[in-house]
Image (cartoon, rainbow, N blue to C red; front, top):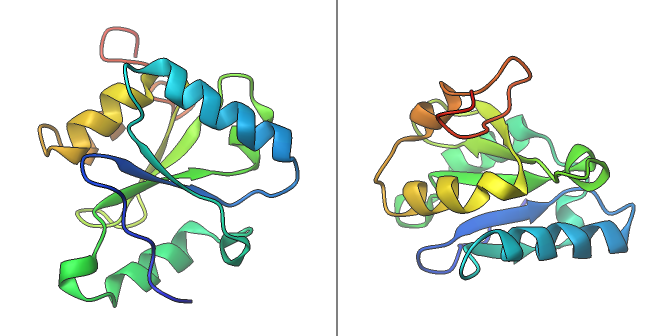
Length: 141
């Protein structure tokens, strides 16, 4: 697998892994963009990532050139496409490679912005999830 695409500056990589419904993908992007004042996502929709699993992504990123390594990313998988809240799967690729949590579109701007500027660590969000493994803000978990 070629290296992961690089996100645009101060955005997070949102990688589509489910290609079963184009309208659902459009709805996910619209929900993420509507959640914040401006887009915080670099969207990648390439068939080579269809059904890719977290372990494969972690392994590929581990061998990437240090200048091109990505710290974290968000997957738009089957759950993201089917659930009305469009919960992305956040994936740590650096500190605890493979650690994940769900983040609904509503909370994506908070998580993405804080991770992209290194204001907060992945673990701070992952440690604040509810019993379903979903981050819903620090006051609601």
